[in-house]
Structure formats: structure tokens, C-alpha cells
Image 1 (cartoon, rainbow, N blue to C red):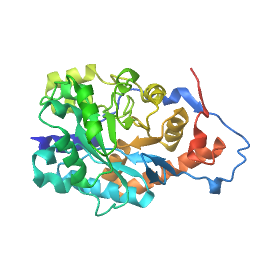
Image 2: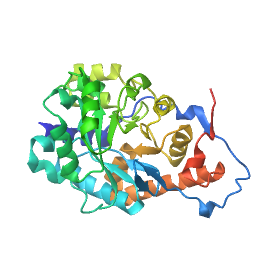
Image 3: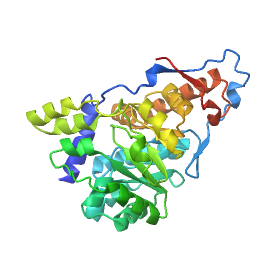
Amino acid sequence: MIIGRKKDHLRICIERDVQAGDTGLGRYRLIYRELPEIDYDEIDTSTSFLGAQLKYPLIIEAMTGGSPEGGVINKCLAKLAQKYGLGFGVGSQRAAIEDSSLNEYFQVRDVAPDIFLVANLGAVQLNYGFGISECKKAVKMIKADALALHVNPLQEAIQPEGNRNFKNLIDKINKIASKLNKPLIVKAVGSGLTYNIAEKLQVSAFDTAGVGGTCWSIIEGCRGGKSTRELSEIFRGFGIPTAECIGTITHTDKPLIASGGIRSGLDVAKTLSLGADVAGIALPLLKAYNREGEKGVIEHLERIFTELRISMFLTGSNKIKELDGKIEFLG
């Protein structure tokens, strides 16, 4: 059943319009400096995140896994993460925890030995038999550098097979963080994160996955019947815009991945100016892969890198950290 669901998710993301809402980034602009006083060719786009060195402040976000099709895509994207010095996250490994024959569809270290690699499980599974053992198994399975526990109450509420018991997860997540011996990231799934919850989580980092990008309510609605589709439309775009997430979660003083509707290098620069450490991108790369395979993903990534570099140049930012604060709210 899980394998079929993963295949559905990939197909729907490729074939349907699954984006919803507004990231809020359009209400901000970078502060232009007409005399940058830097050399474009000397701009340094490298940065660090949770102890890892990245050539660009970008993580290819969790999209897929648990099926042969997903395994092929994972290999391609991880190979390009290795090529360009990016981070990379796999999709939920729950299926492989429950059925070890699926492990191979998450394996990428053979093509990406040096990348910052993030394992992935649903936080709600901590209420359905998973614990520290399964979390460590997910990390060990793919030789990951960190684990993301994704929080997806909207998706689970709409999903016909959803797991909806979200009781006492703050305490359970904190216990995992204290025992994992790897960085633990709490990752939203298209509806964002709030400061009130984030401040209670004793984890290593957060991933906003705010409104404005992929909407999992819509994806699950596409898998169901008429009533499920109608229900999913009611909650299209429900949650917190990405820009708002960044503005509040930075107050936790924890490293932050800004994701949710990041579609250009200018978007990346805006998120970094707002206080994020790196940005995350998923759906555009999946669509680029579907159109033109590896070539399409390369072209898309290189365009983002160029847009980021130009954004840095036009703000007089020679290094990534120099982007911080060079942004203004338009109202």
C-alpha cells in the first residue's frame, strides 16, 4: 500500500498543479546597491550548515523514495548534489523500515559519498510504534548526516490512510533528539512552522516548508474520491507563508532551512537576507527531471546559481553571510 502511495505522489506532483498559496517573498525586495564595490567573479557562494560545508546554500529537499521510480530519481538528484556541493534529503523511509527489501531505493552514497545527507521519517510515527531504534535505523540505512522528522497534520488528515494521532509529540521528539547522536531537524510539509511550537522543540534545526510551494492537501485530494478532493480544496494553501515562517523561526536561534515555494536564485537570496541559513527546493527539480532528465535538472540548478550570484552582486554581498538583513518589506 505504501509503495502504491509513493508512486501516486510522484505521478500527481508531475501531472497536476499541486502548488498553493503565496510564499510572501514577493512583499520583500533586496536592498539594491548601484555601486556594489565587489568583483562579481570573486563572489563566494559557499556556506556551512550543521557542520557541513556546502558550495551553495541549497538543499535538494525530500521528495521521493520507496519505489523503483523514486530510487532512480534519488540517484540522479544525489549525484548532482555531489557535483555541485549541495545538501540532499530523501523522502520518508517508513516503507523501508517496515520492509527492508525497499532499502535500495533510498541508497545514494555510491554516487554521492560526500554530500550532507538527511534521512527522513514522519514524526507522527512516534505514536505508531516507532522510537529511537527506528530513527537510528533510518540514519544508518543511508549513512545519513542528520535526520528530519516531518510534521504533516494536514496531509494525514486528508489522506485516506492517514495517521492522525499527534498527541504528546513534542516530548517524544525531544527525547529522540537527546538520544540520536546525529542532528535532528523538524521539517514542515507545506503548511509551515510556528514559533510557539518551535521554541519548545530541543532539536538541532528547522525546515520551514511554508505555504506557497507544494500543497500536500491537494496531492492527497487527487488520490481520493470526489468528497476527498472537495475537502482538500477547502484547505488549499492552509498554514503559514514561507516568509512569515522565516521571520518567526529565526527567533529560536537554531539553524534554519527555508523551503516552500522557493523557485529562483532571487528567492534563495531573499530567504537568506531574512535570516535563513540555507534554502530548500524540491518540486521544480522533479518537474525538470520529468521533462529532460538529468540535463533538465542541471540547467535548472545552474540558473538558480546564476540568479543567486547576481542577487549577491547587486546587494554588494561578497559572501553568503553578507546578505543578512539586506532586505526591506514593501507592505
